[in-house]
Length: 245
Image (cartoon, rainbow, N blue to C red; front, side, top):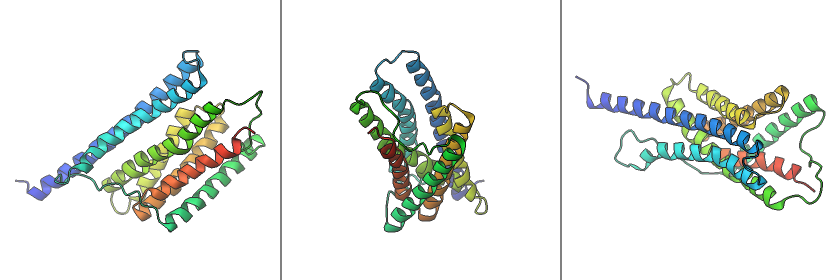
């Protein structure tokens, strides 16, 4: 006959597996929707550029948000012994310093790869004809610099990584950081659909490195504030340096 502690352990493991599966499904749906919306927009189905950006963003945000909320619902049940530890969004001085260091390393690697592959860093304003669409730029910047970094860090480093780590042994727990970073990088390659193989390799490598470093920071501190800050700064640097002038 199983004891109560054994049943509780089994319940926790089942709940953890269910959470991981839910998040994987959410990521998969986000990829499929994003690629469908992008193809639909390129085919003229969404004529307005601002609507194209919003539709592409929502195609990713909605599945990830639904998946995150579905997983987080148990965290609000104080009497549920299978409920996971609540997310900590704390941000200390050490987290902030580490975040800046992560951005410097990742942006440096990205620029070096871009120069090596294409002869330019890719962090300069693109030439424009006429007056830039300010509304389009602002809408895009808000999504890239605020919404996407926060949502992605909550899903990947805040929810997926710790649950995967709990499912592993003490000696193999580091694999949670690696596998989460891999999934994070794969999502960006599949959604971004780089035009060239080298471009795809650059995107994968840079985002994998970002995920690896932010994941390690979260694993060491138990907080995702530093990871969110690093992701926000990483994207913001690119937006600021490529902003039309």
